[in-house]
Length: 294
Image (cartoon, rainbow, N blue to C red; front, side, top):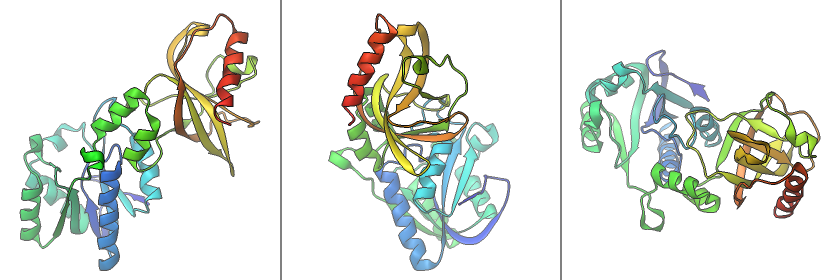
């Protein structure tokens, strides 16, 4: 999968381009990707997807790097990221934006949802995109919204489910598992190792929308094996540590994960974070937590 940053290079193969933000890649977004792949297969086109960096500060369900992981799994050919924090980009009219896209990509078709907007101040929508397509000989596929349970699939709903820690409902909305991706930090006080539960700590991007603090059942593929585990997302009151930490203990894993890239998938919420009187009391509770994932 190629990365073709907005405004930096050209992409010659004839393509179909998905337009949107796609920070959650929920079932509605996945339906758009499936439609684009269907059209592309019949027309011999490459499939690209536009997305953004530098936007929704602290409000991205999946940060840019995590979205790349999803795009690869969906079998897309290229990603077309733009920096939304760039004032010059945000000031573009809808017409200027699309003309720039055509100067860079060999677009034969666009795909978007019926609520898609673009251009300075979201001045344009599906109507203007269809007109632009007619004027420039480009097919435009405007797809109906996906409404599971009668409500529009939306990033806002994904965030509400993260607030509640409702992982099963979130998985249904996303059409795939929720995950956190990052490099295992070498920093920390290694408290987990001292009480028999060595953890892998991942520092979260400031762009990532937070989920409900608590202890979760999780899993991750390490090497060729999938390990189940328990993850603490939040502070560590037993040790007087008020920082929000994401740390995971993997059942049965013995090895050094420091510095490695890890993708941790969430299964379900186990319990709230608690303050224990001693490290021994915490260790006893962690054993009880592990019983719930076996």
